Image (cartoon, rainbow, N blue to C red; front, side, top):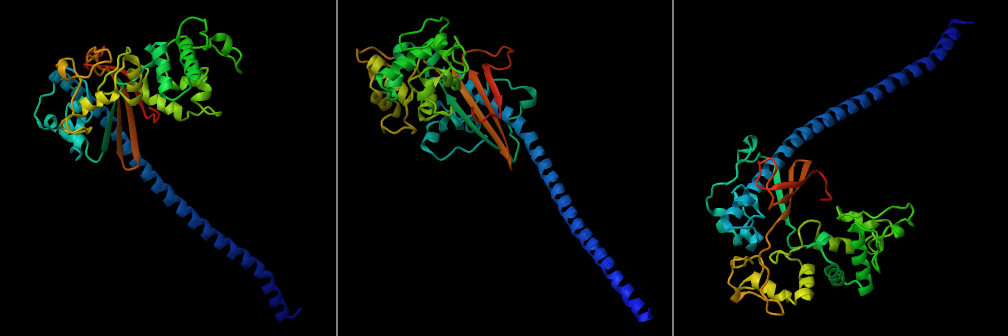
Length: 373
């Protein structure tokens, strides 16, 4: 074999090896580029997560600090004004009341501006770690106080009131009877079904079988198991429908049965109209004041010390029960910073003192980060 032939053969034999090496080198470059991208991405992600954790670590104590301030505001207004009756008193905007937030430019804000502007000393002793009124900077805080005193306390409601409620929700009379009696059968301690109700025998035929609770309702979602409600308040997949959500706004699981006229919703007023011949328009006209507009500075409050001459009366001329105050309120506090968010939901009993003596009110329920509450 000639030298030329030998060189040509060796060159031809080496080409595939150089090609393999080239492919390997290119592959390594691509791999290194991918690894670099991944490392940078993970570092950035870790930095972002660390930032989120740092943000979140401040949100929880800020929410609890806000809760203590809210409790202090409720206690102060109750003491200064002789009771808690209506949001016109200013308790529904605790941070504005304390001067820690700028009041919104709305007619409702003007209604209690004099309260918010006046200097008062808090009558509640805050815990040592929450004693400072200054809230952390860079954190957005939203406080919503839901007054349940104007709703119908279903666990205490009699059959007639329940039927009137369901009829006000535009159910047929037969459907209203089924709902009212089935609900009462569900919560009463016995096993004797009402004519249109249901007890253990009915529920034992379900798949799987179960028994009625035989105790007061603890959650409205429990109604998906109750005869009548299962079809009228929930769809075929068990999801709540529009009837459920309307019912949810009209009732409360707490309270002894009285209705605070200052906070009565449309369904509560419709029930009272049938029960005691109380025209809802007369209630609204009194509360809205001379300008007949809700949320303005001339709004009025039903309270026990009012003169009877100017007050609405029942159809039989009887004076209204004006002794109903706020008792159960749900305080929803949302703190947020950047992409982090913390939700604190608390149910307060304003007529019962805290067992530990720290707060003037009892904390009935306290839940973190549950959007359903």
